[in-house]
Image (tube, rainbow, N blue to C red; front, top):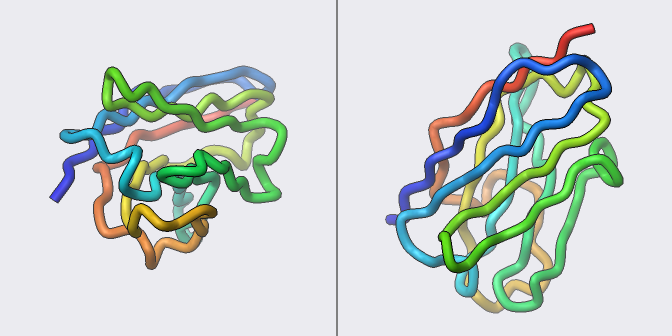
Length: 127
């Protein structure tokens, strides 16, 4: 099973930016859906965005569309989440995940598809 490790979380003021990284133990970007999720205390895990394995089609939640961008570096087995215009309610633990099969052309944002998860990195946005 693939291992995923997130980094890059921290504290930032509202309106600021952060870039999270997710390093995978093997190159899965051509064979699996990869996605970013977050979970705030007392709330359900929320899918933020995904990239499909072959089409590279991106899928974003309405809550982050236009502010967050997912990208990949195949040479580094690394996925990124670029977050701009951060708001107070972006405060959460952020996770990367992988799952599904290579035939997916659009990867869903529901957590059920994803079988491999990182340990999470905390993002705190303050006023």
